[in-house]
Length: 187
Image (tube, rainbow, N blue to C red; front, top):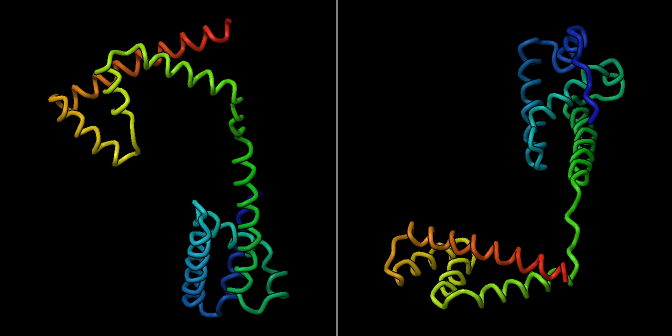
């Protein structure tokens, strides 16, 4: 998003005078409009709503001579500028998200080889190790935690001992799968 230059003191004074002839009321109105802009940006999911609100007030201030001729209501004017700033912000967000290259889908053939290697490596494990491995890495978040506590109690070991065993098994499985995978590519 193109950033506007900071307004000169004269431009900012003209903005305040447009908001109200009483300097105290003008300052209060400016703060109310600024906080409203922040709320609107935040409600639209903008991460840095305050900076975007500053951008709106800067753009209005820099163009104050034209703005006074074309708008009678300062809030409506700022909300019009808000839409433009938000559009530019969203365009930048899309550019940033597409700049990161999306992961390429892996070929089915490669996934099948991985599955075969996983099965082969699981078969190489002794039954108690296989049971521990399959049950330790089974489930999602809370279920997994609850299941692991139950598994530790079933095996009559502490949670820390269970983690250590699972870590060693995972490392062993990882090496086995890499070896299997490299063999399947060499053949």
